[in-house]
Length: 249
Image (cartoon, rainbow, N blue to C red; front, top):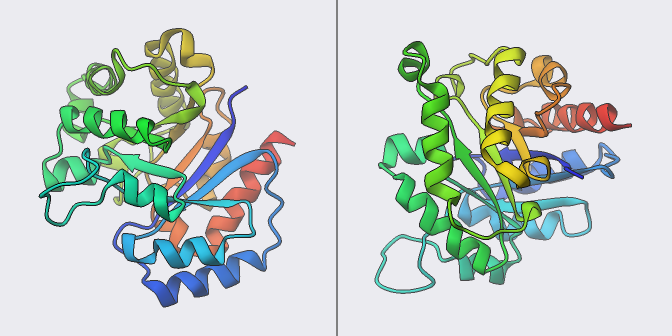
């Protein structure tokens, strides 16, 4: 059975002190997290503090990125081995900001996926089209290409990966895909996954907030959300978690 997944991607926000303050506030909310998986992906330098403050909770910690080699002459990169040694559970790869701002390719995403799985990390693979590609009617073609290049020929446990459909035009813009449109893209992605499609969690990302979370999460093929801005506010993040839990109760 697919599990709901709620992830918070903090991007370049929250140092050690803010991470501790966030956790103190969030843990006071007495969240009843039983039916879903929840993780937070802070900046690398805040990961140890996040692991410490959430150690006795049901919230896992993830990383926003990693390199495709275990070690070597790769200045500024982070090894999956280092993440595993810290106790990180999740890693996000292929986020549109990595692709657009830093030039990451589908090939890089695949290489990262392979080594992340080898080290036993759970992976969120991000895929999604630009506004222009959607206007041209190429959104399905784009996500199919990204997905196939990432996973084709790789053997994986369906519980070890999740797919995040994140239309680039809706990330950090305040725009959100209409629930019907998001549902359609999730259905397409599930079909592309073939036999494993019914077991892989496919989540939505793109300006998810308290006001639109329930309508999105009630769609048949949407199994959760990867949340940016709203995950920086513990009040908003806790409300979205409660919405997800409420849908499954």
